[in-house]
Amino acid sequence: MADRYEPQRIFIAEAWVPGNERLARYLRPDELHTAFQFDFLRAPWRAAKLREVIDDAIAGAASVGAPPTWVLSNHDVPRTVTRYARAQPDGMVESEWERARWSEESADHALGRRRARACALLQLSLPGTAYVYQGEELGLEEVEDLPAEVRQDPTWLQSGCTDVGRDGCRIPLPWSGSQAPYGFSPPGSAGTWLPQPEHWGAHTVAAQERDRESILNLYRAALGLRPRLWVGAGEVRWLASSEGVLGFARGEAQCWVNTGASEVELPEGTEVALASEPGVERVLPPDAAVWLVARSLP
Image (cartoon, rainbow, N blue to C red; front, side, top):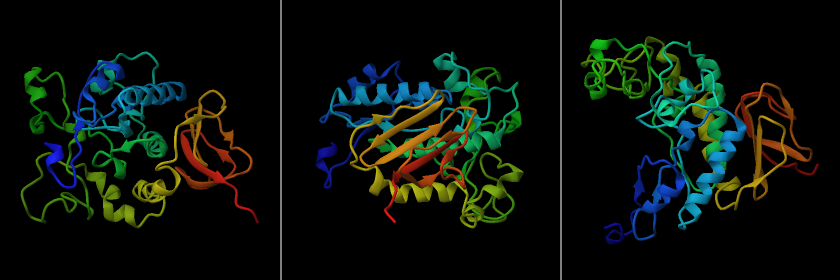
């Protein structure tokens, strides 16, 4: 069917399976061309685990001649900001990572957004295709305090109102203005199908366009640089790094991610092309990422 169109269409599989060996069975040039790589959704903010995910995903896709296809969140799991806003245990089982809401632990959304910014640079520097789930580019958090009477996900009722389901990552996006519906629908119209938080005025597209350091402008800068630095840059080459730090090169560019608690010095002979946090030059702080290129000659 895809080949009947001009230009030809591409099929992307949404296949929740135990591992990349199984995922590869769905992929062939004459079957499904690519599949969402969901392992980041189930990985804690730890350098060793992130490296394991990357290696396994690339190898699995390459075994059938397919590109890896990266995502950080989707409509079935808690948003990236909220997943990274709490403790990052090593041993959680897959089902807990997919549906956990951590209702008993307070979420540090500032920390979660910092880590989400860094992970965006990691995702966009990898080989293959990157997908951004709506609202990720705005740094939206999971809305965890929805009243029971407004929940829409069938999971809520089917579980006897014990599983809060997926409504928290499906709140309509805030576009502009200081109060709901934030430009999502005309003023004076009926309320959105799920209520938007009162504080989302600070996260609207309009508000973030005015802030040079916003996560929206970080995404735009990264997407602008990606074709020059990363598209067609070749395989991932891991670089020696300290514990808690992830570093690799592709072509002439490098990506470094610090998931540890201490700052680390960046390699000599390089300069910052883009950083997830402002002010990064020779030292990478915790929960931050950076793209490096060879230092220009004076």
